[in-house]
Amino acid sequence: MFSFIKKHWLAYIIGVALAVALGLGAAYVVGLVGTTPDDAPSQSGSSSVIM
Image 1 (tube, rainbow, N blue to C red):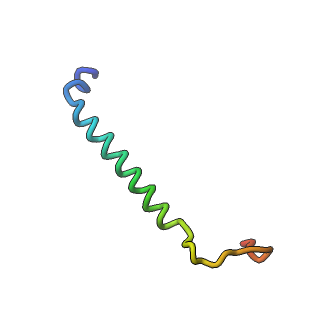
Image 2: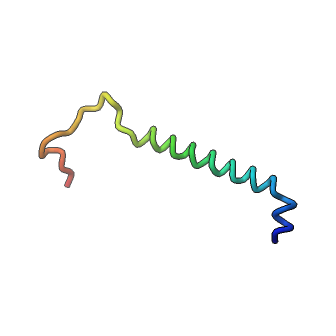
Image 3: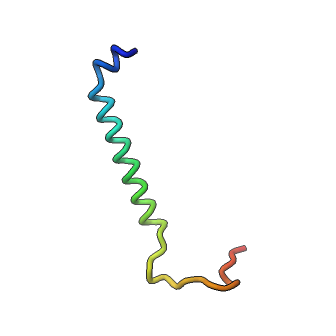
């Protein structure tokens, strides 16, 4: 098994780099979509409770 990894180490490095880039990209997109804009009205008081 280790001989296979030794022969193909570059593919593993590329795979890890690709996985990290995709994960960070997905986290960025989720952050953009899920973040409330600054100009949105704030909810305060007891009326902000969602049932």
